[in-house]
Image (cartoon, rainbow, N blue to C red; front, top):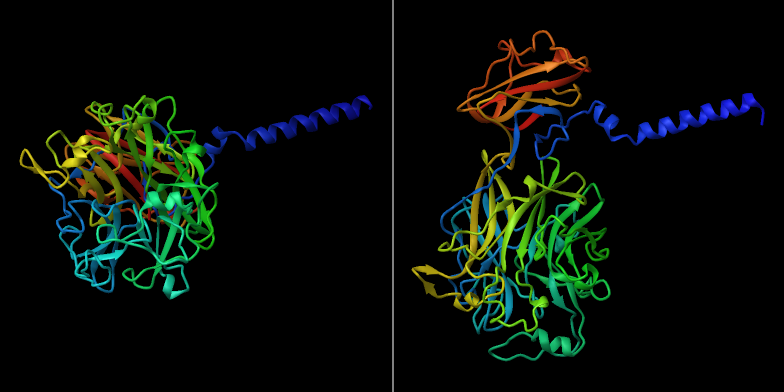
Length: 529
């Protein structure tokens, strides 16, 4: 090779490597202008933030209602009501009511029932007598589905993507395979017993049911749809149809064999709801988590373009698998409690722990009704608030106090019930500034068809001021801090203005940055609309 050709080759190689490095450089990616959707941009992380000073990210806990809003006071409920993930609560636009599917546990029959309730306001619930399922010789109850052997921990999906009316309502749970032989039962145990089914070698795993109305259900003939060697555990959640994956998304707990022992979070998809991929482990405890903590489950829902996860932290201490004789005597000093942390994801698969793994919804104090387990499950937007529904329990997951369910101890009923906690709109986290003024500078944003800046901020005891910068970090005339109307209110949606005008049409097509100044204030979200 000639000297000239060698130099030319080396130059091309350097250019190629430079282009490759540029394409893979996250710093340069962060400098490219972005176009925002109409979704409000939450400050769960710094993906929108280029720099900030004198501000801290604060995780906000929802405020619990003092008492449960639905209790298991019927014979088939035995003081056990549980909401197990999203979707559980649906608002019916035609009837103007909230519809709830929840789980009750009949201890005597060792079986789970899916029950149905309605509400006009999302707080006060009615249990209609449906006359569908038999319980101890009577159909005077609100039970809608029982499974063949089990049907625990189920949610109900109203599938607008489904073309078959008979399958518009979908439920996914944990059950045994159907059998061709007649079922045997007794008055005490009207359903087959799980232990006996295992002895017979019957398959057990993720199972499906379908309904045209959410009340009358048919078990899928192909149950279970995930079984050994694909086995998934008995804790699973549905996101539903997701256009990003062109199919259904579920968060199923992988088998203990797959996880190596601890409970972890799995991810599964299906193009038709009946054929599911083997759950892939996407989130597991790491070296920053206590060694006895496990991830019991994680309901996931979509909110403002993000995937929000309620991660159930199981304080499995001491772990029964690690003691020589896992009986109640060994567990006498156990924590065995469940609490909820917050996660989020951009793609529904790679999740970030929010707030340095602080508790988002903790178990209640010693004398509270929900002192044992608190598992955030579903969320609705109600005006300027987020209403988060959770399963709360007095007993721990494993403990002698579970024997006390239904009894009254120190003036409090020991039970599992439905709790409600409230948070301001977009109120998961905020960027907070104290007495010293703080600053938040966004990345470059390309102004498209959006003509307004709106913020969600609490400046009731302080102030928030906003200015727009050009691509040279220079304040844009007419949109400077001196021009800005100072916000001194607590508002979930405030239109930002400069000397009485807020229209950004004159900046269409330009690239800007937004700079916020905060003092004794919290900034929750920003949107271009």
